[in-house]
Image (cartoon, rainbow, N blue to C red):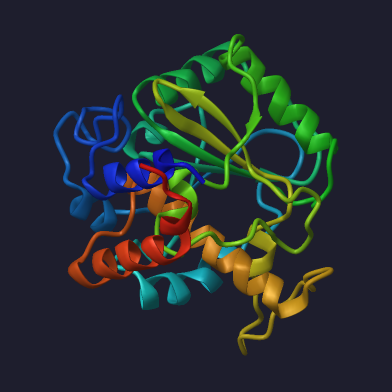
Length: 270
């Protein structure tokens, strides 16, 4: 690995991400400025409710994930998830949006397309999860169709394992869910940030447990180790979506720097 990786890591540790102004007005800003801490304090798990298909295939995923997330991070979210539709202005109150499903869905209307595009134009980030856990599914066809209308020039591309997302809290979690249909995440780059993050692996399904804490869906082929990686990845996705960078308190900052030196320093060339 060349020294560009370490330089990029230190750049993110300095909270300096070119082209992304985390304090700029946009989704979730309500016209004012918010610090990273305020974003973590005010987080709401917001999911898009759309017509046709199945917009909520893992309805209890957030309830199950909430204790895990709040137990290991400084994110203090609302306990209840919130469903938003594109026929009102609610989507603009939040900087992070989840879209999931397991089947084809009805195309967005022109006004709905316009609102979703404005969400992205304002700096919003969207996580997409194909709950079918397969490639080239009906949901996949629908979501690609809709995003192509919004981003006619930009294309989905594999997100590099050196992307800040994979260091946003846990170091380099594996890409997994209840399935490993793809060993990578896809993304769309827009306005100098990864605006769309796309998992094909039913990531949210790996978070679902019954009332006793027993997982509901089996994770194949990697079992509970795979489930653990899925949980870590979800934490990283949320952290990246809210701050665009590492979790930066004094303890984690020192640990991250030390672990980066251990893993990457031998390959750094002056």
